[in-house]
Amino acid sequence: MPSRESYIVKRGKKQSRRRAEKETGQRSALFTTALGLNVSAGSIPSLPVSGSPSDPSKGSGTRLNRAPAPPKPTSPASTFWQPIRSFALSQLTSLVRRATLRESDLAPKYEKVHNFKVHTFRGPHWCEYCANFMWGLIAQGVKCADCGLNVHKQCSKVVPNDCQPDLRHVKKVYSCDLTTLVKAHNTKRPMVVDMCIQELEARGLQSEGLYRISGFSELIEDVKLAFDRDGEKADISTNAYEDINIITGALKLYFRELPIPLITYDAHPRFIDAAKISDPEKRLEALHEALKLLPPAHCETLRYLMAHLKRVTQNEKDNLMSSENLGIVFGPTLMRAPELDAMTALNDIRYQRLVVETLITNEDVLF
Image (cartoon, rainbow, N blue to C red; front, side, top):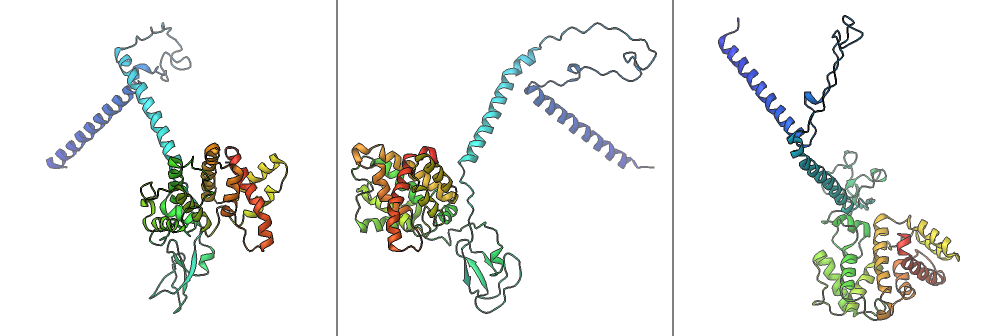
């Protein structure tokens, strides 16, 4: 026979459970009423019960014909909650829209291969891919120069292209791989491109000979060192560099020192072949297909640069820089063919100019 104490404990638990269920029901009813979704028992028609007189197939077979109930008048409560319901729905729609915009503003997830180099590890080390020991005294494995991943040389061939560069390893801005730089700083484009173009458009679009006239090389080197040392905190304002040609020189130097050009070595032949097409429409189609060969970070940077250069041409009356002139300046800077003899490189210059000129003129169509 249960004791009095156990009976009291069980009774207390039942009362606590009933109280919690009652509070939950009250909160649910309040939320439902606030949205105007009244699902109380009075608003839902009752279903006939098996064996009741209202079921013609069950019971005594007698059916009662009842007059339809008059429509229920609109209660003041539903009229009161209707504006609140509309407001809640509008806020929900706004939240969804803002969340979508935030996702589109985030830096894209660029894919990057690891930059593995043979490395001699001090002390015992294990492969971070297969978790096996790295045997040997020297050159036991390879290490990614951008993210620091340590793996066997054999494992490096099957490691996924998911390199996440670390700022501890990426210590320079100039002469750094473009995709590595943007992934390390979690940006869409290199900071050099964004900051220089913003400064140029703020105070230099009407400057005569923009991008054609060179600035002092010593001051351009100072800008380069400032970016390598300070990154996004580098000062390139009027107070630091009054001559706008120093900023244009620093931007062109960044593109020249890229280890892989903005228009990559793999895509270079396709762009040259597209420039050789005489039909303008077919040339645009070929250039559009060639752009698909560029890595996403390169394509985004090229799009941003071409949009800027098109705004430069819109001020041609002041700066005297047409799309053809800009093509002459930026052709060899953005396109470099690997391991070509001097004659072939010389013949490619006119096609490089034509590629950049076409990209600037048709920027809104190609990108």
